[in-house]
Length: 440
Ligand code: 5AD
Image (cartoon, rainbow, N blue to C red; front, side, top):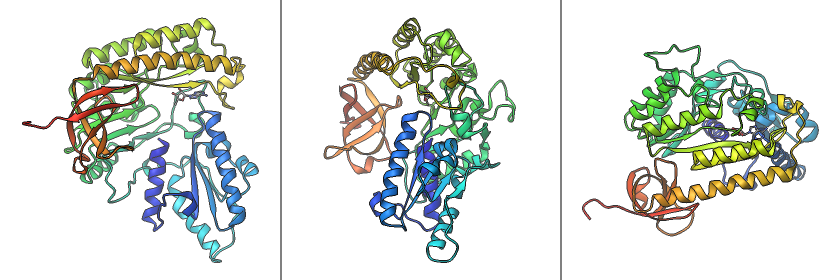
């Protein structure tokens, strides 16, 4: 989501005549887009901004801005810590960045008073529709498309409702128009983005023939000619109803991959986290998905070391994690966020225990991922070619429907094409194969 927000700001800036450079050393302005989900992310951004502040002291014309969730979360207090900041931009004000920069540059040229830090942290009605720009002329084989902003859930560990506000949805028309333009520019795959995508349009757009607004949106996106694959992230287990499961059977562009955050395998923990489902219900969704698409790939988010997580709770998570068998997982050590409900509980699990629990899950994940990757050996995978591989001459990379990266010898001409690749080698991190050539 942050990547998409940054991309939209960059597109707006380009439209205003600014150019994006490859390295911060060449830049007149550095904007840091930030995350507030865990303390580590915030500390990293603060460290980086502090470092940039040193450059500014040598070159007063150099400008630094902080955008996004940390700006929203910490507000003006950030300026006490980082007095060199020129801009502070909240999550509903990304589209204001070009004007703010214009103002700063005008004052630099002596055309206006030198403002102290420019601050935009307010809420703005309609701001959800402003994350829509892509750089004209740039071909993105796979593109992110924001369909909504904010979150109405109240997970006790999570800062996002504070940083992103209440749920606001873009119109289906605007979303489809954006995708049509992307496709006209060569995009073959989109990932629909939202904090909880299956809440899309809730209580605003009526159900139609038992289909939720999100499934209606998927159907409309599916109708866009030239688009080949649809992904989305993330759905919430609550509200993962039969219509969405059925969509996997009906919409062939919908890839057999789902990122479904579990958070914990202990019902007691889920309750404390205020996640309104049980492990049993989660498993039921997985079973339903696998019944519709046996090849379904699954990934998840897990938090270890939430306050009060006992060995028994964690053992349940381990068992469930192993039983379900995830292709990918993002494992997080619980990080206390001021202002959340969980911050009122004691962060009583030591770092050592959090680390050990993290490692234990990583081990399970590693075995499973390797096994799943090795299952692909000998199969022919449909790969959407994204570009040259990072290393190796004439090697190209793309993804299979299950979102696995596949490397194979190819040519530039194949970028943006769906090609059949026979898988020959698989490790935990890399899958390699050869193009299957028709008639050869
Ligand atoms: N500590 C650790 N992980 C967290 N996440 C959200 N809040 C926290 C926190 N306070 C994780 C959740 C979520 C993912 C995006 O980040 O697993 O799904």
